[in-house]
Image 1 (cartoon, helix red, strand yellow):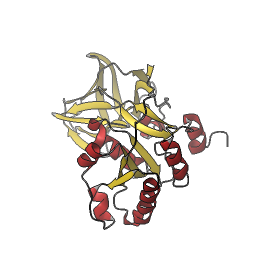
Image 2 (tube, one colour):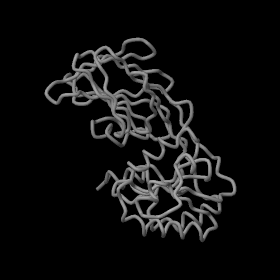
Image 3 (cartoon, helix red, strand yellow):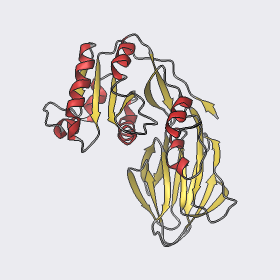
Image 4 (cartoon, helix red, strand yellow):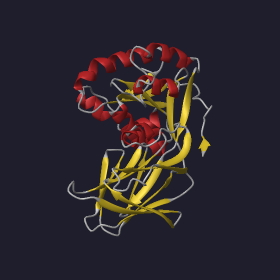
Length: 289
């Protein structure tokens, strides 16, 4: 398992693209405040078109246009909004900054109170960009990328599901229960944590495979190097559903397979230089309280 770090910073930042949490028209005042703060620092701001329509402003740009036009993207909302922005912009290799308006915020670490100081530091190149592992998968000729996790789940709540797993073409386990979570280290604090899986430092390159409510007490979470290709075959005739980052859903029938491997590039996350992963865990999980 490798640790990926990135000391490369952006040169001569001139512009940023903003994407707001969907279905949140009340964010108009917050957007205008963010826009003012960046423009005061001589950084031009462009708004994504769906966000612009939501808060009744003209002149929005598609996400594709933003990714070609700006130096970095800003997600305004919670972790779910950031997940969506990272996945949709991933192919453009553009850094994403998360401004947290929610309550948990494992991924979005900058609050509105911290934003003025962050912008001041940004102009002085006092910030960092993390390289976060992404996974890519395929099912029924559909290809997808995931930032947090891929969940293989039963279709019916009245019965369990049987899933056969392979690593690099060799059988390694058969899972029988409610399903299986295949998580990235970044996603280890999401569904994986709720299901009893391990926390893994987010810059590590590794897969985490965690059974959900397994029928056998011998089934345990597994951490493995990211250079393996993992395959899961659905054994039961009821089929299954594959849920990508909690946002996209694919149906899988009996004897069909889901193949998963590390993506050939990383997602880029912008953070405060002061951000410390273990302090985040301490705060969010209330360790020591």
